[in-house]
Length: 84
Image (cartoon, rainbow, N blue to C red; front, top):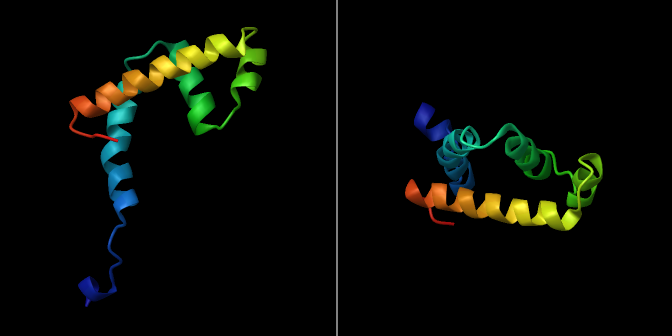
């Protein structure tokens, strides 16, 4: 009866369960400042402009840093066999 009532996981839920520990492990390889930048932008949804203002830097500089962080994350995921 339990099998009939259980709701199968969606692909997205499965992917999140698989990817989240890898992202957490990757975050630990970053400096505290890089971790904060990534979390502010992608977890908390802060705009680049807002972060730049808080950190007294340019939006262009932060955008470049975020681009490099995303590429670094992509490589870490691919190393684990996850291709997006």
